[in-house]
Length: 415
Ligand SMILES: Cc1ncc(COP(=O)(O)O)c(C=O)c1O
Image 1 (cartoon, rainbow, N blue to C red):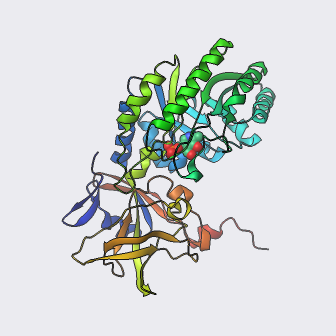
Image 2: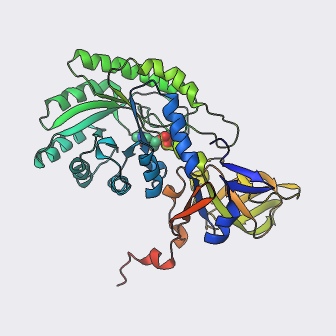
Image 3: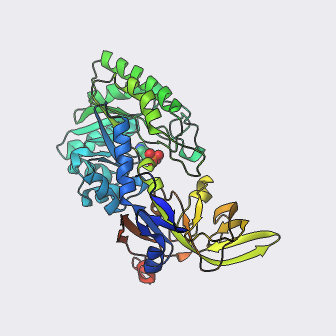
């Protein structure tokens, strides 16, 4: 679905639904996701890599609402989980355990047990100590643990430093220079079964080049494993495929596929992908309302009711989200800082942004908020987390209620 968010008669729609309907019914801030946008992204991704023998595992860290996970499960995707909580959600969403992969640089004993008892497709191991731990836990459960080792290929994904993961200086995976040794140790441990090798070099990667570098290294690495008698069923290239946030970074996934498929086709087993952002980011918006406007020291501020606790990406990564009014007017444009209500100067949505003159009560949409939006939200300033709504054509479904004040204190014990 090409145009998920469109203006008709100067009003912004999601699919065939007037977004104002949702803002008025559920209040703001509210996340809105397009079902058909998300399913189309999965189709586009699958189709781009169609000649590969593959499994696309939706990385639920991007957006872990159970209804969203269920959508991808229904679309045939596997699931990539990074914690016991995500695994719990995946199961609740009806994911098939043999299509779930379990990742994470710091798994607890409880999480390893949970993944083994769930009989996931594989656990990805990120350190020598973890090999031993999984082996011991599997032995105590009288199970054989299917594992892949996450190799850190030491390539620069050319993305924001906070979302770069495949450099030697990052905490993830086992350095490629030591990883042959890790596989040999894994082979010697009686309760492990080696099924794959894995990499994930970063997020919001906008060109195929870093993947090419890393995959070339990984293929050579797999050839060496073969020579040492280790044959793998899975080669997992991770996620990280970028999206266009501000109209300046057109991403064509077919270009990635054209460059990467010939390299991956050499592998005899199954290729696993773990896209998160690519499948959800551009299918979601965060609706917010203008509370006040003011001018200070020659700066114009638009104060909205969504803050850094609702969407932290601008603060954390300097992410540039487009912001669109739900109703276009003929007011002249202004250059403003759009800021939230949280008591931090770092609480901004967009700085020095040119947008039509906003008035108190206007609704705005923070675009491309379907990934790493709600999932990174918090209760900072004791703010209630937002509602979430799914849209299918002109139908809508509340998939998470806005928190109440009572929800905020429900776990607390007053002494
Ligand atoms: C191991 C792993 N796989 C997949 C992903 C998903 O990345 P993205 O949303 O950029 O596709 C991440 C993100 O951090 C990750 O750490």
